[in-house]
Length: 336
Image (cartoon, rainbow, N blue to C red):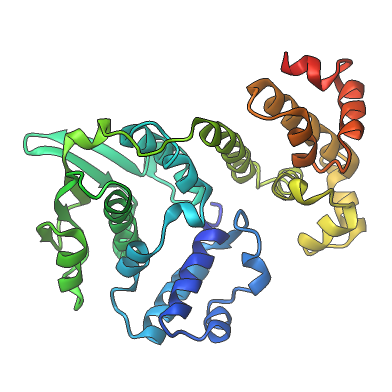
């Protein structure tokens, strides 16, 4: 079984919020076993068990038992996660929910038995319910708190006049800060229930998202697909190398020594282990750039120059030469 993770952007946002509430940043990081550098790139991953310690230590340091609720209430998902950018760029709330379900592992990896979606819409005799099907939720009820309140607070923040939540059910016992549930959800809450879910207004699904941006939506979907592939391929060293390169290419090319350092191994070890998988660093970089280039150009959302810089080329002409070497055609021709 792979080790569950959360995005560095998500962990970093919680850290910043806790610090704003009075927690000591250095002590909090040390307690969670997280290095400051681990959070520098929001697309990096932080082990879930360290995130749990981060959350609970932050609660202790701030004296705020409802910290998970307040974290969702006072932070914007689109400020620290590509998933927020995607959902807020969809045409309707329902479409945004579909994209959230699709990419939710980029925020927090949670494996659901049978491969089902974590967040599920279920219609019953009493209405439409949005369920969080995370297994063993009471081991970390703070994740339930932050997830359900994130839905409510994001909707309220971007569409305050929209009818949304009508009732809330959670599986964990009534906490000392239960009064904050009443305030944040503004709906009846049942503790010790059989599921974690919210009864919502069906009209929410068709409500338009204010100021959707189709261009941003398309570009970020492509980037998120790359990050999803990174998670899926993380079992192989080649997949880990591709993930590092894909997340950093826009900042300029990384050489083999830099990648080896990021992976906490020597350059010789990286060379040998890639060779064992039938690959080389140069071949992985070349193939990744070619695949991304073809995807970016075929989408027609990015110019040749934008594509060149996203792939780490300092000069668009160098990218054009490389693309012609790869495909026999110019990038302008590929765009049509």
